[in-house]
Every structure is written in C-alpha cells, then in structure tokens.
Image (cartoon, rainbow, N blue to C red; front, side, top):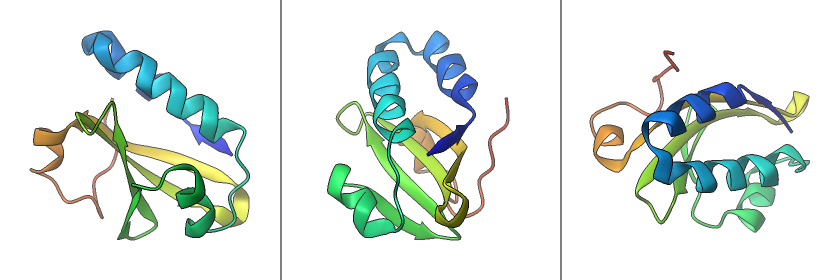
Length: 101
C-alpha cells in the first residue's frame, strides 16, 4: 500500500518518542501489504475498526495511541488523517478528522 504521508508519523514521534517504534512497525507492515478489503486488513490487525467514510482506526502501542487513516482499496493508497493519544481521539469525530501538520 502507498502511505501518504510517513512524515506525519515521524513528526508525531518527535513529540512522543515512545510511539516511534510502534508507528514504524505499523508503517513497515502496511507498506508491503496489498489489501483489497477490510477482511484482509483484519487478518493483520484484528483490532482495526471501520468507522465509516473510508476511515479506519488502528490501536498503536497497546491502545495508548490511535491512528486514523483513510484507505482507498481500489488504488492501494492510505491517507493518514490523525495520530494522537487515546484521550485526544475521544474528543474528535473519526469520520471527518483531517490531518493538520
């Protein structure tokens, strides 16, 4: 899968160094994946949640952090929409949030 943009993950990890390894592990797994649907995503990440509007929520580092992405299966592309703590995630609408650098 093509992931747009890895820089969002590394920028977040600069402020939250304890998230770096988990975010890079997620990136490494996903960048070589070739998912066609949610069932294939769940084969690798069984805790992923689909929240609508092509948005998927991944638990990062034992659910301490949340990663929201938009997955366009037809073009094998993932857009990072949000990286944050579980508490920050609870305050937003996962269906509409957009990444802001």
